[in-house]
Image (cartoon, rainbow, N blue to C red):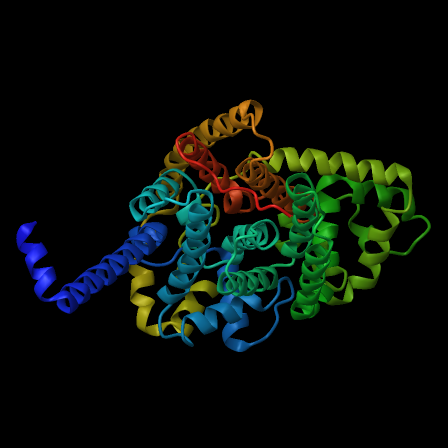
Length: 464
């Protein structure tokens, strides 16, 4: 120590520069390790994870055409972040950077003395024991659901934000909304919830902020108008087919109306997925996704025209939401798409330099049944950890004394995000494990932070 002290006295500029360079290198290593941990699922696979929808996103981005069933936003995101096909890994890096930024901001907000090693520990726990890394490492828009929610929390309730942070968060929020049609409804509900929280915490509803973000959310609809017009009616009809409401409505009205779909009323698909995608679906015999719209819209409006049907809608929504809350397995759709499939062709077309990585990836090289067995073992661990996390969250909410603690309401907000996301996706689209998996990791995040909060102080609520 004495030698270093003498060196510092004689050569202060050199020592200052040395410390700066060391810190600079240390921070760089920290960021690299963080991104590796977040993307570990893709790294283990040897290629970013894919889903059947990835094929559509690739085509929409590189061909700049809005698909029938989703906005073009995520396709453009792939195009831009991959640097026009230079590397598909850059898409995953971009997603990892955004979620890392938001989580690190959150950690430092609630725990002012937070350290880099603590960040790495939390990220490791999330990646190993939840859907976190799987969602971030996947080439679909699912990670943007929690990105939008966490951005909103800080934008509305975090009164200590720097201007630069606020600008980034607004950008991330706009990006997240533009990625998926469900994000419009999810985020408008979350804005209302956060406004109520603001009243509890700060004694004001944050009307201006709330209205501004609702307007901003609705403006984002302009980026998906074509997709909304092409597909909303088909998704809603698929849901009505699965829950039996369509069958009941057709039985009661086909003697009065000349609907084309009446010819199929006794043979409607039992699942929404079958209604949407199977070749035998009535959709492809009643005008397809475009020409079926007038008839489908009339039927959908008809099912909301009486109290009897409204009650049915409510009951089915409760039932499907309850089911969806139990659906959060990883690996849903993550099987090999080999030669002849559209995904295979599009990876080869848009990322030719990395196509061999795709063919040599773990999922591609593993038989589907064996891969599903691997995912089943992973999900067994995830289910156990999620139940434990749920218990920790429940105990915290019941026994935490300071109900004016902003961290307390952050925990409630994360649970509300999980519920709202599952509710809207289940009620309006289909039950699917990926809809649950994209937000289920928030439960473990809050549980970890609850455990850490037992020894740390939270930020003071600003006086207003």
